[in-house]
Amino acid sequence: MMAGVVQWFETYATWLLALSLVSLLLGVLLAPFFVSRIPQDYFSHPHRQRYSRMASHPLLNTLLVAVKNLVGALLVIAGIVMLFLPGQGLLTLLVGLMIMNYPGKYALECWLIQRPGVLPAINWLRRKSNQLPLRAPDDADGQEGLRNEDRSGKG
Image (cartoon, rainbow, N blue to C red; front, side):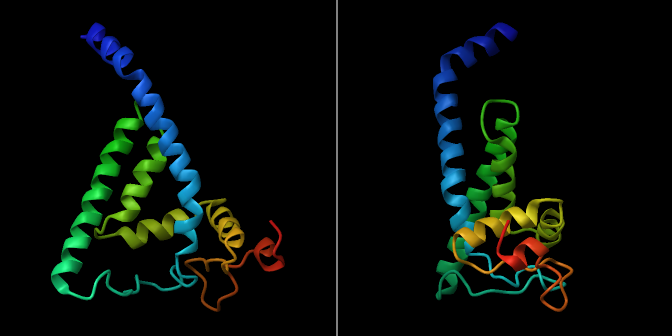
């Protein structure tokens, strides 16, 4: 059994390394784009706000949502696999979870954004894209989510 695992790994090690490097590069290149597309007040509401549909025709919208959820599910599976193999497992897993639609997703997003260092890092990426900083989930007046470093424009 163990010899088979070692042989499989030796056979596909180059592909795993290439996939790991591609996922790292895609993550670094695409993160600022996706973070800059989050509305500034996305986390300012007690419940997730409904944003515009992906497509105007209901059938096309349903198809696009299904494809989006399928891609998210594939990323979750790939992320779980990459937790044990070379690759950006945790990042891929989180991206897959953020793409999919499921009950409790908004609560998970709010919990993640409140982890130490996450909001300042996201707002740093937003500043690089000339976007206003995100407001924190507990932000009632529009100022609490702007940390001191975010208000001054330094960080």
